[in-house]
Structures are given as structure tokens and as C-alpha cells.
Image (cartoon, rainbow, N blue to C red; front, side, top):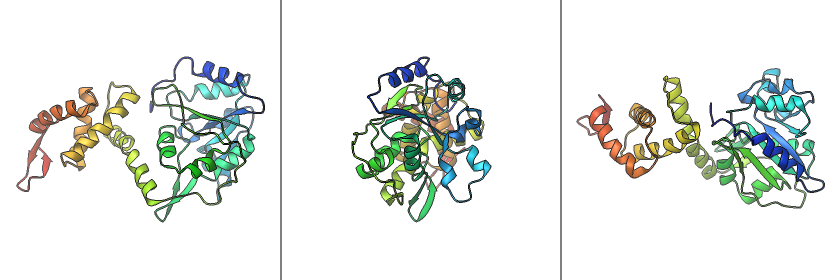
Length: 279
């Protein structure tokens, strides 16, 4: 699993939230289809696929597209689809006065973003990325992507509902004409994704851990920070991160420094140029 199992009452909480909506508001689900390709086909009602507006959109592209649909507590096919999302960072619930169609159009404009002279897939529907993304956006960009939403909830790494700190705006806002990040924003997002990328590399090498996904992610940023502090890189960094996960150690940097000294003695030798190398 990429995040912790969903909390037992997560769907009950969503239903209760839906029941308490102010007049005129609705809850629209944003689901990242990349984690369950073709999942939208299991719905009784056709959702709004965000990638359909992209040039050359194919059936394969549709299968991995994020999609938007209005939350209806009595929709049994939707409940089945949501149950298959358990353990994946793919469910957001946006409370807004906009229609699902207008919200989907707004979000679709942010699916591809220009940054540092390149265009890339902006994975705001991946709830692991979502808090970091909102953290780097300017206030104007947050308004453009969320519109007049009065709440943006998502299933976090701990399997529970979390809320994006977003100040609601009552006015209508235009759809983004050209989604763009500056170099600083792009650099921060690359840095924020490093722990997840490290875990992907460890998994590819057959790495395992008994830590829940949320604790694993809390530990890896500290392990990577210490690797930079002690000037190790490449395979040594990967081996050090694997060791941290196998020790099930704390993410406290002071405690990690003690573990690092022992690990260096046992696993790493120093070349003539003083660069650490795996023995």
C-alpha cells in the first residue's frame, strides 16, 4: 500500500459531511485513476475525465485520467469504486458551489503545467503530492485551481481525512488560461517528492519494511537529510535509507546521527579521496 489503510469510518465521515452542507453547495470527488486504471468504467454514472481535454487523448489515457463526479451517498457503484481505493493516495472531496462540470474544467486546466521550460503532468490528484502542491502555489494560483470551494478534504498518508488550509472565496474566478510554475516552485516540488522516489527505488530493489506507509514517509526525509549532511550519495544513500527502514528507527535527527555512526563503521569504507564508498 502507498498510504495507510483507510480509517474504518472514513466513508461514514464523508456522508456526514455531505449531510451538513450549506444550501447550494455540493461535494465533488476527485479520484486519481492512475492507481486503478479503468476504475471509472465500474461506475453507473459517467464521471468527468480531466484528461479528455488533452490533445490526442486515447483510451489508454482515459484509463489513467483523474476524474470528477458528484458524491451521492446512495450511489452503490460509487461506494464499490471507493472501496477499491483503500490504501492508495487517490481520493479528494471538494466542497464547492460550482457544478461538477465547472470544477472539472477548472481542474483540467492544471493537469499539465509549464515549469522551467518544460511541460509536465501536475499530480494534484495524488493526495501524497496535494499538500506540498498547495504549499508552493501562490494565493492567486490556489484560487484559480480551487475556485469558490469552501473545503478541500483528502485521504492523507495516515488513511484519515485531512483538510487543505484554504481560505474560501465567494467570487467567481476564471479558468486558468496557462498553468505555470516558476523555477523556485518547481524546485521545491522536486525536493518534496524525494522521499517517495527513494521508496520507489528501494521497492524496485526488493526492499521491504514493517513500518506503516505514513511512518515510512516520516522517516525517509530525515534519513535523506542526514545523508546530505554527511555527504554520502548514490548507492550509499539508498543503502542508508534501507538500513533506517529495517531498524524501524525514529525519524528524530539526533537519534539517527547515532545510528549513522554505527552504520558507517559497519558498512562504509573511505577511499583515498575521503569519499564514502560501500565496502
